[in-house]
Amino acid sequence: MGFFLETLLGGLMAGMLYSLVALGFVLIYKASGVFNFAQGAMVLFAALAMARFAEWVPAWTGLESKIAANLIAFLIAGAVMFVVAWVIERLVLRHLVNQEGATLLMATLGITYFMEGLGQTIFGGDIYKIDIGMPKEPMFALENMFQGGILINKEDVIAAAIAAALVVALSMFFQKTSTGRALRAVADDHQAAQSIGIPLNRIWVIVWCVAGVVALVAGMIWGSKLGVQFSLATVALRALPVVILGGLTSVPGAIIGGLIIGVGEKLSEVYLGPYVGGGIEIWFAYALALVFLLFRPQGLFGEKIIDRV
Image 1: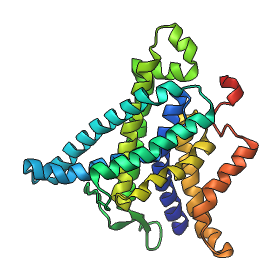
Image 2: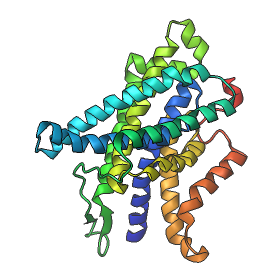
Image 3: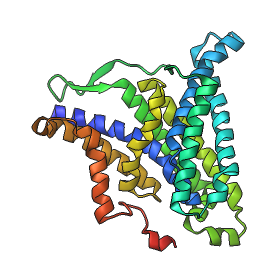
Image 4: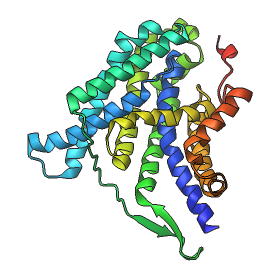
């Protein structure tokens, strides 16, 4: 039982990180109808900015406090992501809203490669480290209940807590603020929202900026765990099954879908892997997403496309 709980907790923590990346897809699609394939590149660009500014700020200012340097680096990287998100929305995707899917696909793929190249030009192409002080050593919990206790990675716990806090903050933003209610109105019906005076262009800019901040937090966490390297852009591919499972138009779906896939990956690898040769964790999420595409393409909480037309 202890080993099962250990595996379950590991899956839940991994699922929270998947959900964090998936939120970027859902937020942009809900507000503008654009499926942003460049979300992975945004995560990479944000992680590069965070890592490099964390190095540059002490050199520029002489700061010795790692906490202060990381905080300043986070604020600067956040401002950079605001600018990047604003430029992408203003110059490219605003003009492609409601265009054919193939057009949007090519545009966001082009943005992906442009951002990867720009990131390498500005920040360099080496592997960088983000050190925000998260402990790497594991710990044992519930030793009184289970023999030997449950092994938990402290870094995963802190990362999951940060992801959960951001999700709660976004939920409060959407539920309690006038801007959040306007975003929900735009997501429900563009024309109706515009008819009551909600400016769609401003709302789309806000959504892209929020998605940029989400990408920054995701990049900071993943960069701290894995190091900042250009393969980090592929983290978005891990979030695609989450979006398909939870529903492309549902924020709660992104969260629940991430938890389901995180837990499913870990449990299937541990309990089924020995019988099929291992490697289930690599393809489990995509196989589950394929099943949903065949039998429930709108996902667990998403809307049918015909309902949005």
